[in-house]
Length: 206
Image (cartoon, rainbow, N blue to C red; front, side):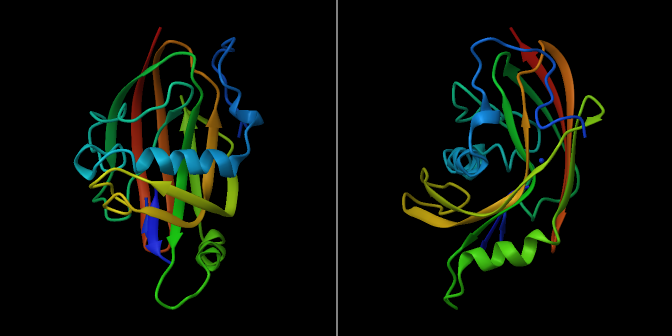
């Protein structure tokens, strides 16, 4: 669930990477710094307007919007989502997955308080679980790292073409490329004022 706030926007244990197959040539996101991946994920969020955004999507129809070639992003919901969300999503084989169980992008507010303080206050109250085909996936913390993004008009964060900088934090799962076929991924997350409840029916194609 992603959350954004002007300092809240709320925008998911086998191993750090749960692999159904080893796919030669795939990007090794285990070697990437998690704060860098977090920034890439927020770049993806702002690359689509609200009415076609994978985070506001309630069916999975827009899960492929703005996806890079070398990684596949999944998402929870914003904090104002009403009830559980079920998404059906077709994705390619050979790409790793990054998904938050719960996360926050803290933006500057009029008080002048550092955005990182919002992350520090919330991180201790965040909890989440992501499962893949019934097995729990390891979650990793980002406790407050710089995020800078510039999105399209109508995006759910800045709403316009302006550049936005803040502090990002959350509980993240890195998942290795999945075997072709059907998979189920569940996201459950909580933080003050909101929770995430998303089920993905994934179809991985050759």
